[in-house]
Image (cartoon, rainbow, N blue to C red; front, side, top):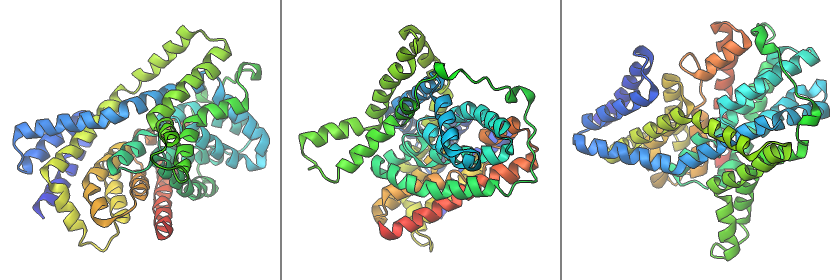
Length: 439
C-alpha cells in the first residue's frame, strides 16, 4: 500500500507546485518525477535515466504528429477553409438548426486542430453567427466548443489520445471509429441540449471580439476542398483500419495501406495537400506558406516540453515497478479497468487542469492492467480521454479562455463551461461501457 500512497502524494505535490507556487507544468512534472523516483527507492542516477528515456520515447513518437497537426490547422485557417465550411453549413442547416451546423463545424475543424487553436479560430465565427441570426451566444457557442473538447479528448490524431493509444498499443483506426460513436451522444447531451438550459446566463464579450472580419467568399476555397483538406488525415487513418479487416496482413497492398494510414504519414500527406489547396492554389507563394508553417510550430514548443515531462513521470512509475503494485491493488477494487482509468484521469484532471497531462499520467499508472485483464486497448484510450475532460475549472487554460471571450463571471463559467465538460466526460464513460458489452 505504501507505493500507492507515494504515488497519490506525488500528485498532491505536483498540484502544490503548480497551484500554490505557480510553477510551470513542465518544471513541476520534472521535479515530481525526481521526487517520486527517489521516494520509491530508485537510485538517483536511475531516476535521471528514466526521465530521459521517458521524454525521448514519448516525444519520439509524438513530435511529428504535433508538428504536422498544428501546421495543417494553420494552413486551413490562413487559407480561408474554416470560413468556407462555416458559411456553407449554416446555409445548409438554416437558422432553426444552427446548433447542429456548429456541431458539425466543431467536429470537422476540431479533429485536425489543437483545442486552443480551434477555439481561437472558431469563436469569432460563433460571434458572427449569433449576431447574424439573433440567437443567444451561449446557445450557439457551447455546442461548437463541446465538439472541439470531445475531439481533443477522444480522437486521434490529437496529441493526448494518440499518445495514450501508443502507450496502450491501441489500433488508431479502431480508436477513431469507436471514439466517433461515443463522441456523438456526448456532444448532443453536453453541447446541444445542455446549452438550452442556460437561458439565465448572459455573456458580455469584449467589443473587439464581436468585430469579426469576414473575408469575401471569392477569396475562400470551395467547401468540399476545405472539408476534404481538413478531414484528409482522418480519412486515411479510417480507410487503413477498415481495409485491415479485409486484406491479408502479409500482403503488399496491406503494407502500403498501413504505411499511408500511419498517423504521422497521414498528417504529412495532409500537410502537403493543404500546402496546395490552402496555399499555392490561393495565390500564396511557397515562401509565405513555409513562413506560416514555421510560425505554427513555434506555438507548440511548450506543449512539447510538457508532454515530454508527462512521459518522464510515466516512465519513472513504470521503471520503479509501482505500476505492478497499483495493478494488484486495483484488481481488488470492485471496478472494471475502464471505470478505474476514468476515475484516475478525472481526479488528475481536476487536480492539475491539463487534459493531456491527466490522460498520460493515468495511462502510465494503469498500463499493466491491459495485459492482465484483456481489456480492449481502444476502449481504454477512450475511457482515459473521457476522464481527462472532467470538470475543467480555474487551473485549466480552456476555462479562462471561455470566460474571457464570452465575458462571464467565474460562477457563470463554472455553471456553463465546467458543467459541459463534466457532462461530456460522464457520457463518454457510459458510452465506452456500453460499447464494451458488444466488443
